[in-house]
Length: 285
Image 1 (tube, helix red, strand yellow):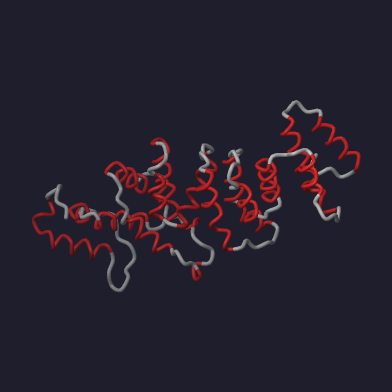
Image 2: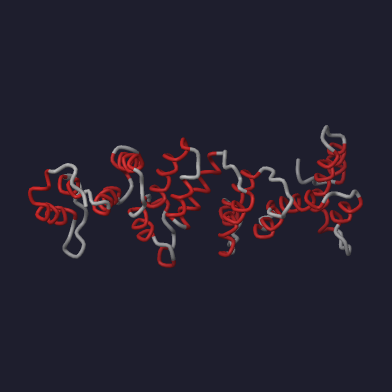
C-alpha cells in the first residue's frame, strides 16, 4: 500500500525494499523516491532524497530519472519532461510515460485543475527526445489523436513512419479525429486549428491509391459512414483529385444547401462541363 500511512507501514515498506531481489541501484532508486515524498515534511537545507543520493553515490542519470517520475506522479508535467529527457538517461517505461503525459489533462480536470496551455508541446518534446516505440496500442492511438489535433499533414507523414500493419488503422483514426463530432473541440469559438481547416487539409493530402480506396471504403461501408460530413469529404476529395466522372456519376450525395448551392447543383454543373466525357471512366484532370 502506497503511500504508507503510519510509521510502522513506512518501516515495513523500507524493509521490503532493502530485502527485495533486485539490484542495489534499483533499491537506491526506490528509497530515493520514498524520501522525495517525505522531504516536504523535513525543512532542511538539503532534501532528504538529495542527501541520500549523495551519500550512496547514486548516479545522476538514475537520480534525475526517478525525480522525473516523481514529478510526473505529482502532475508537474513540464518539470517531469525536463528530467525525463535529461541526456544520458536510458529510456525506461517510455510508452507508459508518454501515455501519462498525453492523458495528463484528463487527470488535472478530474481534480478541478487547469493545465497550462504551454504544456501542450510536452508530448511532442518527449517523443522527439526519447523516441518511444509506441508498441502499446492505447498509447499509440492517444499519440495519433494528439498529432491529428496539432497538424493533419504532420500526422499523415508520421503514419508513413510506422510499420505497414499499423498504417490503415491510423489513417482511420486521422479521419475520425477530423470528422467525428465526439472529437471536436468543446470551445470551437476559441479554437485556432479549426475543424474546417483540418478537413480541407485532409482533403488535400497525397494519399496513395491504396490509401484512397481504404479511406473511401471506411467512409461508405465502415464505421466512418456515421461521421458527419463523411459523404462531403468523399465528394471534395474526388473534386480535388480530378475524378470528375465519379462526381458526375454519384447519385447518393446531396447535402444541405449553402448560399443556394448543394452537391446536386455542383454535380449538374460538372456533368454539363464534361459533356460526353462524363462516361469516360478514366477521365481525370
